[in-house]
Image (cartoon, rainbow, N blue to C red; front, side, top):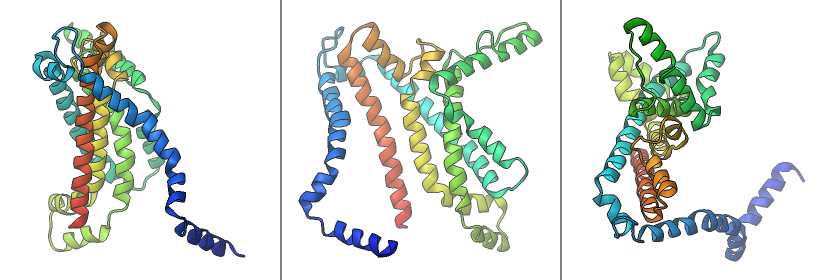
Length: 286
């Protein structure tokens, strides 16, 4: 029996499996899902309903009634949105360029651009400190030029740089692959009809890249919402949700508020992923 006949026989056997057999095949995945996501998340939801140690109200009420928690949530959402938009803009330009151009050293350049994928968040934070910390390159240059140390590492600006550095390689990898699949004949047709490069970019290239942009943007936003290593390296006083949750959990043993903040942060990330999926499905249905 040939290999093709064997594969065809296997497919027919899989199609004829009874429902109970399918259940047994999916049981390991279901057990893993329940043990490592459903049960812990249900416990997290329940813990957020308990009383906060300081306000004597539930963790959810405390999160939405205390200004410093709302400020932390707002900072995290705005920072994640800014990182996502800038990442997509840079990665789309770089991805289109690398997908269309063939030159000596292209592979090396792509490897260098994606090399930070190997760095964890703590290392990225340390690199930001070396660049824009008190003894970093920026501080040394500004001290030499204006006799004043300029530092960005221990602020939201430094965190923005760290998150951008962390997100760009992942976005570039995805958008290079998406750009290589674009139909170049559509651009040639638009150019032959007299369309400017701006119109070609906006009406042909951007719609073609839209599914990749949406999925990459959603993942970038969700990652930035929950990134802890980079923020912890740059300073524990930054008002962002990962550090706020860490402080409530470790410094104050305030488990109810920490759980509520975790659920809220996860909810925002989930909404971003669902919105991206809905938009991609709507685009595909057109």
